[in-house]
Amino acid sequence: MSSPFDLENAATYRLWRDAKRARHPARGQDLVVDVVDPRALTDAEREALLQRCATANMAIYRSPVTDEDKRIPLALAGQLGLHRLDGNWLADEDGISPIAVAPTGGDRPAFIPYTNKPIKWHTDGYYHPGSRHIRGMILHCVRPAKVGGVTALMDHEMAYIALREANPEWVRALMAPDAMTIPERIDDDGIARAAQSGPVFSVDPRSGALHMRYTARTRSIEWRDDPVTSGAVAFLARLLESDDPHMFRLRLVPGMGLVCNNVLHDRAGFVDDPLQPRLLYRARYLDRIQVPSQTETGALA
Image: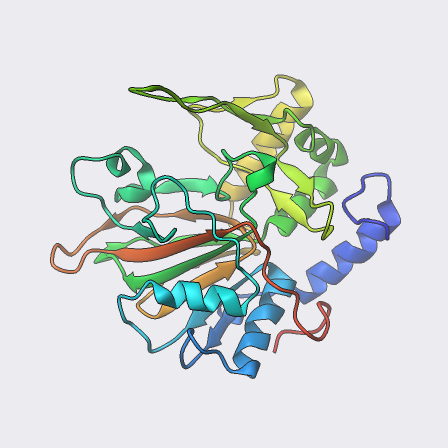
């Protein structure tokens, strides 16, 4: 089957692009699915979440379940086809990362997700090798910040369309195997993580799905040094700083969460309530969210 991400196949790309634009949600609210209990979805709730992920690579669930329980994202993940949990070195022993302002001491305070600072646009695991692509993710809200902490989301396929429409050669440059390099990370014992080079856009050989590996960070990153790559990176930066209609912003509240195929996202800075500090559970997977049982081309339920 021909791929819409093949730059030599303009006809297939146009058909996919037009269908994608026609189906894509117009508002963030269109992503929301009300569920009674994310640990035990009904067939209709599960199908609605899968359908939104097939259409926009993401969905937002909203539930009355506000327990401080890590089993919530784990149980939800299994119902959506996410099984290969990627437990990074800062995650807890169960593979779940509690995203909260970390106390002084230990490794977490040195990394921005564990502070109250804003986080620039990125996809998760951009420093991983291709064998550990983060394809799926769940972010479950236990407690919001007192002020701020808004999340911005953009379907990476819409970013791909914007780039390809502006200049197909920018896409080609970002598909190069050395387009983006994250330098090695050094700790007191030496090299904690080797330098990692790879493309920004790649196509999964098994599913044919588009994967994006990206960070808007400006330090500790090396871009391929050529004019086309520089132009592509500058375009992406402008796109993500714009008010593009395919960009959605929301503030997760207790019982809400994001399920996605590792879409582009950022986080605004925030101020905590000392008595009820912000807490989200993050589960990252090597799997993509399961395709819905009907058709990926249907309208949002």
